[in-house]
Image (cartoon, rainbow, N blue to C red; front, top):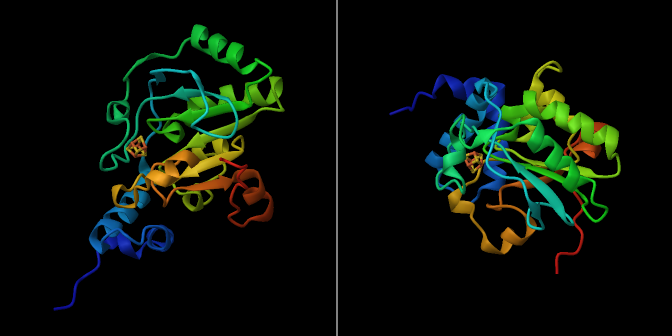
Length: 224
Ligand code: SF4
């Protein structure tokens, strides 16, 4: 019996997602990879979060190079199996992000030994509308500090979006993107020290990628 492909599988976005996840998730069964690639395509339809909520912001050494300040935001529709922060998938989880949160964030960022910020989710790119002004202010006030972000999107799809899509606009401010859905089958404890939950997730050098129009990986510092 010939299997009829799901209509989503004829979309170019599916072919891109399938190609990326097939290379990066070799331990994941075919059916699961199909579901992950389909989720990747439907991620293009995810809406921006109306509420801008956060759960915490603190100094960290495990979410990017050097000492950083992180900002956890709420809402994520990827719903990866065994997500590390399931409650934050809900829009409105945590407390509304206020001027007080912003001032606290910039106070931490202005400490001379802080290297930059990392946006953590939930899904930062579903909060792009809210995070763009913050990223813009960081670039204006602290151009020497780097901006990292986690995302369930793969960078190839973010690059296919229209320039006026907030997710595409937000990408312009990012230095390093830790991209891709968390895949439980690819969980690799030895990779945890390099900021990722599963080994399919890549550290993308966004600015070099934009400049060269080729996917370029972030060159890692020594982690020993
Ligand atoms: S993308 Fe991240 S926050 Fe969203 S469901 Fe997956 S692991 Fe959880």
